[in-house]
Structures are given as structure tokens and as C-alpha cells.
Image (cartoon, rainbow, N blue to C red):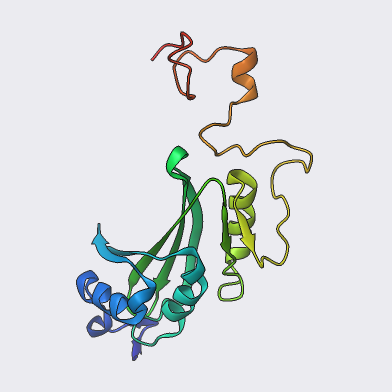
Length: 183
């Protein structure tokens, strides 16, 4: 890839639809879905394929997602969690988002810190805030909360202590509307 002034030549930019075809081709059976949403490629992979998929997206020269952007999760309550990983290709100016669905009963995924060292902090935060275990993480310790803190503050079922002492004027937590909270 030829760089001009530190930026890829215009001919190196890849449209999202073409990039999604590349991602689908390279990941093959590792993914159950590849789609373009809002100019970004999104793919779903099972948890046991996460590290392999991330490694392919990073190392394959047709994709070259060489920049780790973020990792977080969504609490879908009864449906479980969705772990989200975003990678960026500085050579092709394209973003790939990876979604991994996991159950509430078994909230764990493999760590991707061996592929992207920058995922270390994100996995620690996600573990602390959601209670998701990142298997193989080198140091899964707390970032924000005291070690004796009970619970995971970003779970939708987590009740804020401040609302126990002073009622919130609107129904924000699960069950507040039913117990008389305003909407």
C-alpha cells in the first residue's frame, strides 16, 4: 500500500460493501452473519471463535484491521450479554464490529489481549462493570471499584444505592414504575 503524506491513497479506500465481502470471505464459517450498518461492517461470531476471528481480521492483508478501537458489552437481560469489539483498518479506512452473544448463566469469553494488548483495560472494565469473565486475561483486576464492592453497576438489574435513600423523580430502574415511580 502506497502512502502519500501519511495517508492511504484514495485508491486504497474500500467501500463498506466491498469490505464486508472481504470480511465474509476471510472469516468463512467462523461467522454467522456479516452486514453493513451506517457505513461499518458488523459480524457475529461464537465466543469460541472470537480470538481466531480477531487474529484473521488483524493479520490478513486484504482486511488489515491493525487498530483496536474498543470492547464493551450490552446487557440484554433475559437474552444474556452481547460483547462488542471494534477494530479499524488504517490502510483501508474501514471499521469492523464484532458481536459475541453469551448467556447470563455462563458469562465468559476468551481474552483478545494476546492479539491486541490495548484490549487489556477494556476487558478489565467490562469484567468489573458487567461481571463477564475474560478467560486468559493476564491481570483481571478492578479499575474503579473497591475490591469488596458487591455487584456490577452496568447490569440493568443493578439498583443504585442513592435511589434507595432518596427516590428518583422518574422511573429509570426496572420495577420502579410498578412501585409508584413517575414515568
